[in-house]
Figure (cartoon, rainbow, N blue to C red):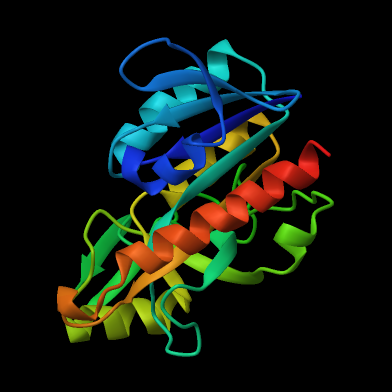
Length: 228
């Protein structure tokens, strides 16, 4: 088995690396590890959709993987998911990809530029149907995500995105991972921990250390189950 872990930044998965045997660093983005009997590559893409799409697309074109795991932190649109909670995002979209018309936002599908069922989209959404037998995964709440170039902090913008796409969480890379993996037909999971709520920006309310501790705990449990 060969697994690719994709993260925007090294600090999001650094605690996990203490459990890996380092093999070599291939370049500035890719490092090779061993965990028990499994080869694990770590791809640190950099923040945002563009960096993620480029580096992941390049990696999937050059190597074969049995599973891709996108790991990171994210913001929650809803208070019923507490800060520190780890979730699996099973549906994604690009909430800024489209056009403004007066006070309305039109998606590419609204504009007729893309058919809602053109691969890899399904009814205008990116949907992950990968099933992996794991209690670490089955215990996670399955949620809809949205991906943006901007971490949103304007109440009116947040309201519009919530009404139009009805996401539970927001990240800056998730939909790019979905797009690349669906196009490449590679099984994948996006696992993220809530570090903050999507609201007017106030970092004093964020808890990144808790989010990272819980995220890496779930990742380690998943890998142990897959290699037992």
